[in-house]
Image (tube, rainbow, N blue to C red; front, top):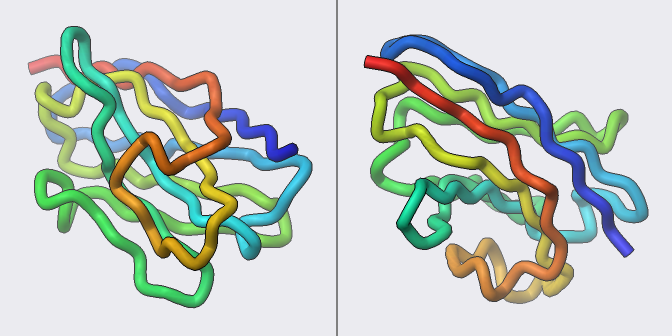
Length: 125
């Protein structure tokens, strides 16, 4: 059973940066596909970025060039670096893990079995 805990959210002005962390227990990122999603009020949960061990990371067009996903395997922690933040990036951000490595990095929330509790990111204009 993989457990995920996010941290690092907060309030930031437009153009600012944040780094979100996702600490995993009960599993390692080398054995799951890992994704970051976000959900704004009144909207569906949407894929932000993700990776499967040994493959290139994948990111949504809306965050390409601004958000970067990385991992520290020794700490079993994944990160999402958020740069050049915009008010439309305001959402609750979730990390998630998919145990089906053969699927690759899915952009569908339905394919992820394990979820963290979420961390709020608010970008003011």
